Length: 509
Image 1: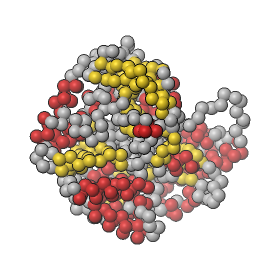
Image 2 (image 1 turned 45 degrees about the vertical axis):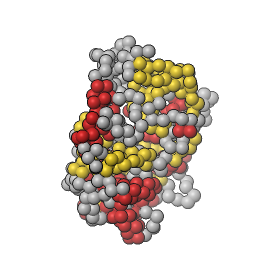
Image 3 (image 1 turned 60 degrees about the horizontal axis):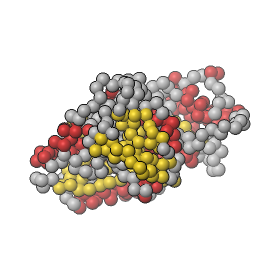
Image 4 (image 1 turned 180 degrees about the horizontal axis):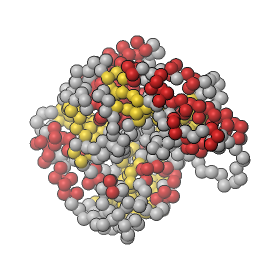
């Protein structure tokens, strides 16, 4: 089958991309039987607790409707939605146990993350779609079934995908359920459906934050550390320390940090990562500034809104005492710090939150070269608010936006995303190449910048040739809502970096 590719320009809305780990959807459909009436009194208790906390910490607290205009008998998700400001893309509510697991990198899924590629368009809005697997969680059911980055499939459970039915066809994927995929191969512009299907089961997965690493030796003798980092998980900071210790022992003097699909996570481990990279690290250097709502800005002194590395480190430590926790992490950072004056960061429209924070907030300290695409535009931070009583009496938790973020100079206006220094389309080479491949378009560009003699061997010429392949002209998907808009990108998590004792209402359900 010869393909007529639709243009893969993300800004025109033609490329559809999402990561399963960034989705926070219900794990089951509503039962078709008659559902019981909601317990209005129980909902009222939960919703009163929710709105009290939101009025206190929510960044847009002044836009929350008066109590007289709120329906306290609603189910908590609907009630929470009624409180959100229209500009808020990222606050959310979930059952407390589910939210805690999700923020720790634990979810129920098959372990794959996909992008969708439109082709064979019969009109500007109607195209067939194929899925290109962009990452697979190590040890997951998908990995055990032999699925890897670059695997292509054209159907789910025997049903082909197109722009009209893809949400229905991919329903089990979106809900973290098992399904089978109908494989295909892609060579140049020719897509060949296969006869093979692979059944993928779903299970609870604890995702590692570091999913791939390697040292690349360039032709001129530069040692390049490559790290594919997919989640900022405070509880997995040791993975970062281990990688940087390996890089330092190997004599790495250049770093390519791959955050192309990283949706964000903990600010504490973001501070650790930045400290491990930068030149002349000092614990008292300010990494991020916070701007709260009117209430909290009045209560929290300006000096306490500037967060140094020393303040950010304790939540990733095993020590309970803050001084001991800082000392532990500070020692680990100093032992593994690469002391670089320049870093190459790969970022795309799927890079959000803590990923953008690292790109933006390292820039005042060193040269940051961003390769790829414009990022998501997530310059906000959130806090987990849950019932702290034992036993817990309210089983919901909220993750509201509470701050706008800025770098050490007070600059933080990137809500439309960070523009790359070098724009490179990773979809110029399909199927996707393995993580760390020197012919991957984004990695190839970084290696070319590090060592110009690598251009002939890394696949730059191949990439440029691939970009010239025949594509469908005139396709207009402006009316087509991209798949990834339904994804949940994780706000920068401030847990542990804000003294909750100052926010007493949070501790009073």
